Length: 262
Ligand SMILES: Nc1ncnc2c1ncn2[C@@H]1O[C@H](COP(=O)(O)OP(=O)(O)OP(=O)(O)O)[C@@H](O)[C@H]1O
Ligand SMILES: [Mg+2]
Image (cartoon, rainbow, N blue to C red; front, side):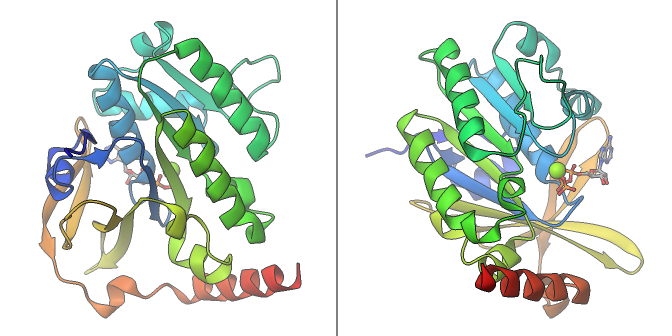
């Protein structure tokens, strides 16, 4: 049976994935701040739009305008799609409550209801759902990570979405939060960053993609004005690339202790 795959909008990443992300998968996009998760999400949403699909983009840490401006810097104009109701940006926090496309708290039930309401309006067309970030929904209750992830996967699979959910400090989610999204996700795309020779460098590695003989190398990436995310060459994995900073390890330990006492 041939697997239908969705292009991510970044040709090299599609190639790494044997053509793209299988339809109806839930894929976790994980990594530290500033390493390219949101930009990847924007590419993924836009690629759907230009292919006559629809997109729902949930943003918890940036405003709707910020996402639109960021996309525009990479020559992706979201405004016509928003006006034509092909794209809906749910701005989770920074909105007055009259805004139809907001949620009033980081409550997973409320989020699901809002998304389903929008999906009913969209109707039959395939919808790419981006939740950036999903981990924001369990920040104050890390022990719920797994339960929420499972719930999200189940509900949205039934509705036919292909889901990209971002998560911060993902090594930590399994370590600190009982296991979270990563075991439940059908795929894991991990972003990393590191300063080498005084320069910030970013990397991407596909850690998991069910039903896919994916590329297992780590690649350096760059974010380029006017273009967005570009994949550079393969790199070797060094110890420094996978070790977390001390302060992060400390936070993980603290979260783990908290989770255990809950
Ligand atoms: N127009 C641009 N040209 C070049 N680089 C840019 C441009 N806009 C953003 N960037 C780079 O992209 C980075 C932000 O990437 P992104 O928002 O995808 O990070 P993230 O992984 O989502 O982080 P967080 O977890 O904090 O949300 C910026 O720090 C900057 O280095
Ligand atoms: Mg982001």
